[in-house]
Image (cartoon, rainbow, N blue to C red):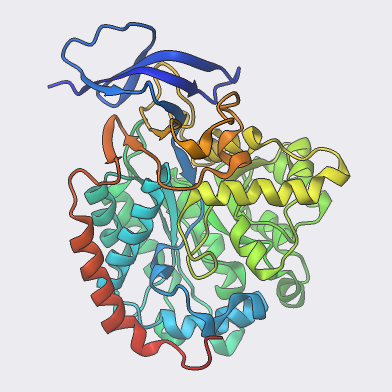
Length: 463
């Protein structure tokens, strides 16, 4: 049976298409998860009708960097990220991460996914590199279970760390893997979950965690494996590791990645705030993108990403929350607002701050291009019905409705949206998950966090 939905008379539809159209008082017809018609007074026979007369409609946001497992290590001032260098922070936090087990992975992932969906995210990539003696190789399987429960379109980054602390990494022995073991599990996950077809709900990305915490052959073999399997590659780059890379290899991280082939249109990197201007041109030439994560940069006091320079040079940009240990939320609308404010502060004196709408397109179309999903990122005929609605008939939004394109990031609309739809199915509506008992899941998640994780939190002053 066809799944037919009609969003009737939307007050405004911000399409984020190539011509940046805004449609007013317009219907959207959806059949089997795809947009099949957009216009006025469309026939509603057989359709579930959603009243859009009070709402602005946007393409679903796409998150391109996160660490869901970190959701149970939040609001923990005894390991305070702003007071440490990245490498120092990693050295401390991994001592907690090694205690994570399979149930923590499941409930922390549910927590992050729920937060994303509530705030308009319809497709998310997660960089899952936490493999402990307690989790075994189950983390991505548990995440797939969580994504299926909530209806999230999910790209799982199968990460790893292979270099021991005795050779210069920050990784406890309990979290180390071998390159062969890592790639064997990547092969299993690709066979089980990877759906390369358009509109597929699940994909796998080969994502060794970061160059300073793995042997070079882990990355070299990852490149060959991913290209053979036709899947994307991802890692951290340009977030403070360059001095270590220069000391270890005599070259900066991007140069090292270029030399081993860990670049190309099937590769994107997280962060990149440490990149030099000339490296922006190199990234663009390779077609590799950057996932901009504004929250950890702000919390850590790191350089603000030079987005105008990157856009001028053709670097593909997308938006990420990053892990909750360095963000404390999985609200991509909040990250969108933060990115705009950061750029306004940083760029106006340098001429060329991106507009709020340009940043929205980075969070939608930019994310779709980064993940290789041409069918996502905009509201057009033939594309996926991944979208969200915000109720604009609220007192706090009076005086803002003349500019739907710039509203979200400029005004700071960062609370829960009115409705989130993924693949044509309503997964969040009017403050509820239609098919999930949120309070029961939260109760069990808090129990797991308290019993499994809290005993390992470092003690000390929280002031």
